[in-house]
Length: 245
Image (cartoon, rainbow, N blue to C red):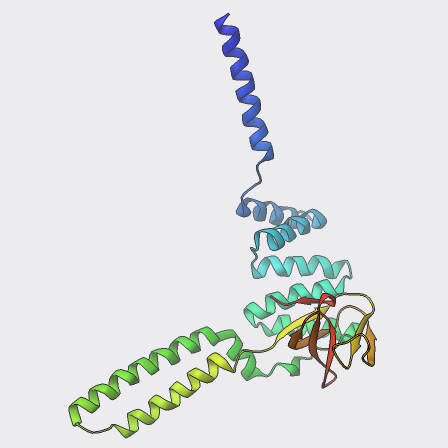
């Protein structure tokens, strides 16, 4: 019965292949294409689930994807989630249209920490192009290093002008690397979050707030995050925050 054995083997081989294909997950680009198709078709819940999977599990996202996710959450009036997703897109693009829309949502819902004035035009420009500024500054420092050495060998004297420029750009490079990194930001996501005046459950309570407020994170101490709140330093539990990426 050789033919019967072959048929049985073919049957089990086909079954195994089908099981593997069914159990295997789609590659991220296929998942994104499917999610985009669902979004266009108005199947927002299904689309959001796929987008969220890419974001949380695959750690893959684009500005367009984050804006679509924010659109879905805003339609559902889930504003803290909306602001978080818009914030991720803004931090990557520094697009003022996104920033202004965040401020509008925050103003309508009495959320703190989203004022457009809180980000100056200069700070926004720097954050958007900081990597390019760093590269250009480093290139200038290297060029001035070579220039100082050449002039010193050629003239047998210390080149004052080139050296001044060298130290100026070197100081800016050190400043940029060590001191111009902005503090992290986070959005409060936990219901009835206690804002305290110290990193202790026994500290005085400043205020109890609901989800949606954005805070600047100054430091972290164990389970506590040191934040800015109404112009003063305060503390909340880190688990109450969702950190901006």
